[in-house]
Amino acid sequence: MGPKYARGQKVTIRSVKDQRYQPKYPEIEQYVNQAGTIVESYSLRASQGNRTGVAVPQPADNYIYRVHLDRQNKLVTASEEALEPLGDED
Image 1 (cartoon, one colour):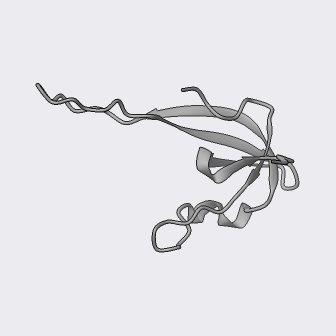
Image 2 (cartoon, rainbow, N blue to C red):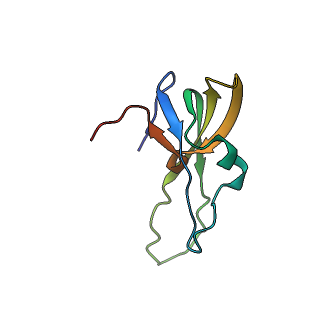
C-alpha cells in the first residue's frame, strides 16, 4: 500500500494519544491544528525475522512526512496518523 498523502497535498497536524491518553508524538504537539503542505514522504518498513515453518504476516509500511507549515515557514516531520487532509468534509 502506498502513502496516503501526495506531495503538494494540504494537510492539518492533529494530536494522537496513546493508550494512557498521553500525546503519542509530543514533539509535534505545538503544531496541532496548523495547516501545511506535504513536501516529502518516506516509507519505514519493519524488518521481518526468519522463522522456518511459521506463517509470519508481512509487516505494513509506515509512512512519515515532511510538512511545510504555512504560517510558520517551518518544516516538521509527522507520522501518517498525525495528519488529516485539509478541508476534508465527510
